[in-house]
Amino acid sequence: MKYLILITLLSLTHLVIASDVNDDFNIVEVAEGNYLHKGVHVSVDDKHHDDIANIGFIIGNRCIAVVDTGGSIDIGMKLLKKIKSISDKPICYVINTHVHFDHILGNKAFVLDNPEFIGHENLGIEVERNRNFFLEQFKNDLGPNPSASSIIGPNVLIDKPTQLDLGDRIITLTPFPVSHSHSDLTIMDNRTSTLWAGDLIFRERIPSLTGSLIGWVKVMKELFNLKVELVIPGHGNVAESMTIAIKQQRDYLHRLLNETRNSIEEGQFINEAAENVDSENLSGWLLHDSQHPTNVSRAFNELEWE
Image (cartoon, rainbow, N blue to C red; front, top):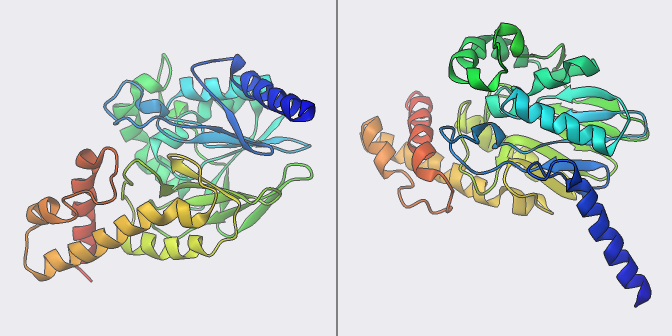
């Protein structure tokens, strides 16, 4: 009994230490050496829109890999401060799972650490394509004097599964075809079988479709076959199996695909489909009303040319 109490106290102490430095920016060690900051479920119009993504880092014996940096330089700085409070190892890699603002605009905070900025083979092009949009829409998130140089893109591009050694810890980066976006990749910590899925997997918060619905459905099948112990989605709670991680989203994407096809076959216009497809929010998504009509419209535009 004494040992059980001691173990419990040590566990609680670990959790307190992980939140001491900045209590409004919690970090949890979700698997050995894998630290997660969980984003909040608010809309992009909310004042906390820069903190909606799951971001974090993986610590090896040699160095640290950061996985996404948040939606502002401020969030990136908070993540950096948290990393420095937990480990004195250098940051060797900043890995972006895709181009969306909430995962990439914090990159600038890490420049002085001189890491390699790594992304999907399409990420460089996607950053350039979105640079002006980011400056216009998120200028308040890019520091006091926002400019094109405030947005840091990749200097290493991945076009095939690639392994990186953090020091007795191998991580595998896997790029995927167009699905959620045009630049999705995952990070697997091989030591703990922890998958950082980026926005290929959403939980609780409704997915946003910006790539290809057909492609995303195919990628979900690939992900389902992975052997994992823990899945960290781009948004929402971690899951202890892939089955749990993808169920809500897989059901939704299949309904979106099938019901949109039916709407097209019935001769509905795009605005009618947006009202009728999955109108009851059967998956129980948060922020459904704000994002779902856009998903239907994008699905419609893709599927009407099948």
